[in-house]
Length: 313
Image (cartoon, rainbow, N blue to C red):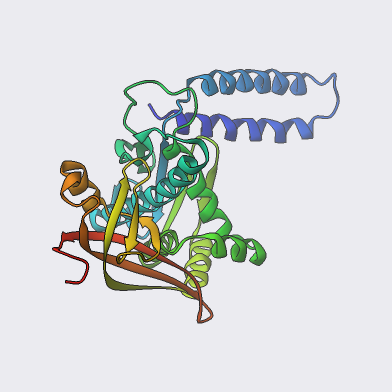
């Protein structure tokens, strides 16, 4: 079942064995010999497990605290909100990674934009195993969605770190959309009094109540403003592989780039010729990230398109 959690258990056992070995320093001690044999067996099991880990995305989210009842049940509203917002956070990072990869390397597999699905309800702990759908063709390299899952864990780790410089560096580097997504996760966990453990293929992170409170408090100092904006112009292209658009403002204005909403992506794929290279009225969601009242970055997410007779209408 949960390969990720099997690996976690083996690593926990290995850490315990290493602790025991430090207590028995005599190389001829029978107890030390037994712990060495146990260590070798665990290392072998971990090596075998590494060979089974797939290159598609997989993550386990485990919860304790306020929304969990008797270590067996979890509040439906909390579970729905936290899973939806975690999914959104990973999708934002995946789209941004896909755009960068496409620019640097050419075509990128479409798999990164797939949704994570609940593979299993985890027994023994209250939580969920989320998994990227199987690829039509196997991949010899990790998918972008898998990379985004690991990056999401790193982002949460650094933003909640006791190292203030590490927090500031990561907060400065996040796009407004990614910052908005992580703020929502922190608020949901903090308001519910929840603790969470995130177990990925490469990293695992324990967020206790204190660390979540610190994360939520810090992110309150970062403001993400949302506003609607309408522009006349020409849609030059939408790239589903990276969920991004290219739009020229007016007749000969600047060309702007950014993310597309999920609904627009679906509409465009069903009938791209209806709006591509035609005069359109575009509606954007403008996300502005501020720290200490200073604008850090601005991002425009394309929400809808309406064909118009001319750019002067």
